[in-house]
Amino acid sequence: LEVFDGSKFDKWVELGSAPALQASLKFYKEILDLGFKVFLLTGRSEEQRGVTEENLRRSGIERWDRLIL
Image (cartoon, rainbow, N blue to C red; front, side):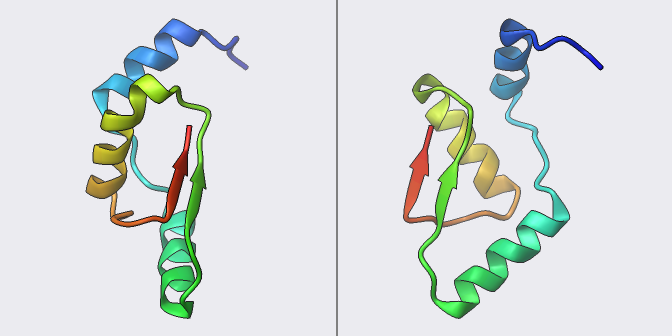
């Protein structure tokens, strides 16, 4: 196990290169097909909203009703 390092995490987030988990992406698409609203909850800060939104879109998560940071 590795001890959480907030500054390392923030630097990693700023790279904007986090891939979507395939199971999560599949679930996301199924939820959209069923007509449900999509709410995303993340442990990221509000200051990271822009890079998070860009990263989500590049990963295939292109729309949501609410992104909670």
